[in-house]
Length: 237
Image (cartoon, rainbow, N blue to C red; front, top):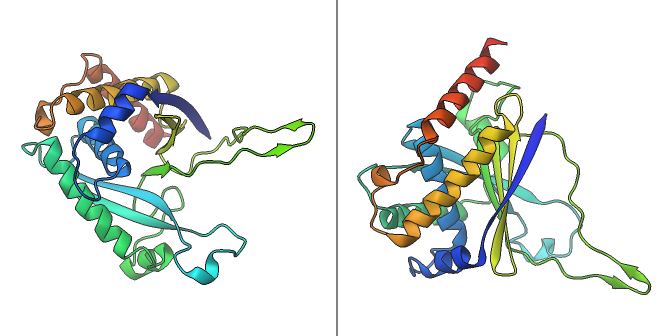
C-alpha cells in the first residue's frame, strides 16, 4: 500500500531556481532532479544514484493524434562526488539527461531483457525511486451550467519505494511524494520533504557549495535511523 504527502516550492524559491545556473538545456527538471539526487545521497551515503523517470513517447508525427497512453521509462544513473559543487552536479546531470533523451526510443522492457537481470516481483528491475515532472498546463473546461476542476485520483498503491511528481503551475512547483507504507512512516516522509526544501535553499544561496558541505538539520540523524530501522523491519517480516 502507498501513502502520499504534498509540499510546495513557493513562488520566491521557484523564481530563484529558474534564475540559477543559466546554461543552455539546464532545465528546471535537471535542477529538481539534482536536488533529489543530493537528498538520496545524504540519506543513503551512496554516491551512485539510479533513478527512473517516465517520458512521453509520441515523437513520431503519426502518433500525435493516436489515442492511448504512450509512455516509456528512462533510467538516470548519476555518480555524485562529495567534493564537487552543486553547479558541477547540474552540468553532469544535464549531460546525462540529454544522453538519456537521445536514447529514449529504446524500450525499457527490452533494456531489462538485454541486461538479463534476475527477476524479482517485489521490486523494479533497475531502480526503486522515480522522479517525474509535469509542466503541461491543463486547460480549463467550461460547459454551460457546469464548473469542472481537477480531482486527485484516490490511488492507494506505490509502485516504487519513493516517487516524486513535480508539477509547475502559477509560478510555484507542487510536489507529490508517494511512498511505500511498509517501508516508511508518514512522519519520516514529512521530514524528508522539509530536508528537500532545506537543500534547495542552500544551493540557491551558494551555487559553489560542495555536496559534502550541504548541511541537514540536527533531526536528520534521527530520521535516518528511523529509515534504517523501518527498512530493516520490512526485511525481517
